[in-house]
Amino acid sequence: MKEFDNRKSLKTFWHRHGHQIIGLLVLAVVIIIGIIGYRETHPKAPTYNEMLGIDDMHLSYKVDTKGFDGEMFIYSVYFKKDVTQSDTDELNSRISKLTEDYTEENYYGYITLLEPDGKKAEIMLDLGNADDDRMIKGILEALDGMKGIKKVVINEEAEY
Image 1 (cartoon, rainbow, N blue to C red):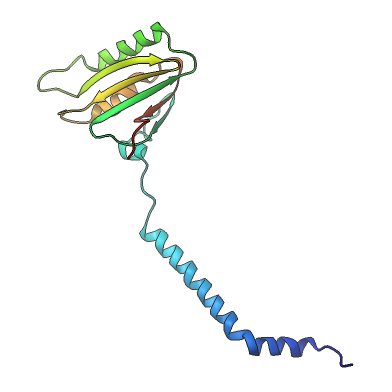
Image 2 (cartoon, one colour):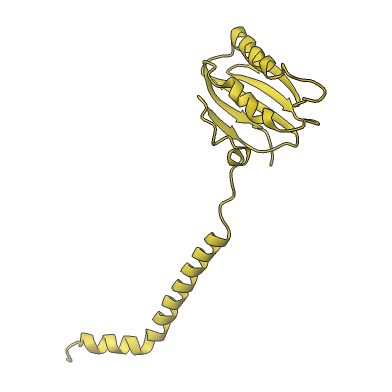
């Protein structure tokens, strides 16, 4: 019986399959270069919070924007406990302060407080023919510092 020679079998293997191994290495390099190139030419899309400038705000609660629904923004304000009448009154007061300087020339949209449900109150902002969109962040700023707010979700039911 002949003794097994490792060097000979490796040499034989390389002669038979070397071109396949080199081909696989070249393919791996091409795939890696393609992935790197794709990432550089297709950067990550900004989030809705980044587009609206909400990430730059330093609020006392978490804000998440789920999407856009035309000119309509519905703010779902989640509290740590069930919404009480005093919470509703304070929300109304803070919203009323936002709209104090409304005039025909100074119109920011239609704002209303919807009926609270459990731990959630909703504020509806319809920008309509508003001159600018400062109320989108203005509502968030008005709610900042209010006790009991856990988070605010903008357009929770939006599809886009």
